Image (cartoon, rainbow, N blue to C red; front, side):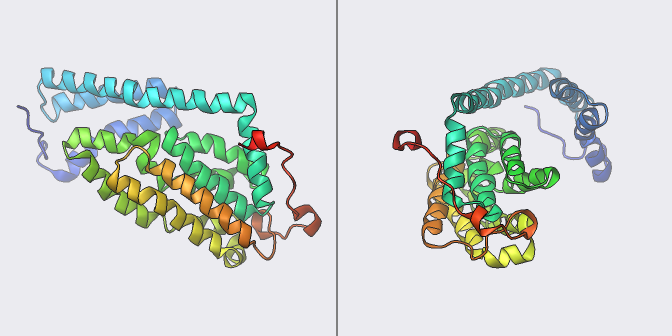
Length: 299
């Protein structure tokens, strides 16, 4: 049985540099040469395969099996989830259900950019990451934030930071499932260990999100949103990750976070309604607008 060589070149720094070659190559092909993602990843995988055979001296039969197994795992576990996640979301978008949801959510939270950032970027972004993953929350959440008045670049930044905690359980736990397959460690144990780390990491992003869209004054006036948003996500994510596994922590965390934030908004609202950049919104314009939906449409 093949045992992986830790330092095949006799120098750890040199070995690390060689190991980085596929990653650097992939980034260069995507960012510099603007290759299509499928072609860049294909070339990167072939270079990785060649390095495994030549530098790490992996036997060809074992290397071929590992390459094919990895490709099959990617097609089945990753592409299958992503495909149907996209089909589900696009079906909701084309049918108008997602637009109704967006209108309802804006009506619940008013026009305060801090409230909408927590609802859309943090809670809804976590839900999309848990169901689809692979950057899909960025593609969906960023345009919504832009429509709320946030600048293009900052909307992308907000969507990216909001995705920081949920990413470990993205696409129904694909990263944890892949890690368990590679290491041979128990899936539930890995899920629980990562869940503990994620629970700690999830305490910070809501504060950063509030700062990015409204500055320090905005944070001071809406700190309950950050506390309830982070603790709400953790309350749903952590027990599911520890006791049930890696499949639904993000979904549970997002759902509990939604409920917690909406419950908070029933009893508390920011004293001053702020737009992007911490600019106060005209009181008449800031008044929550009705969503115009029937009870059946809301349901």
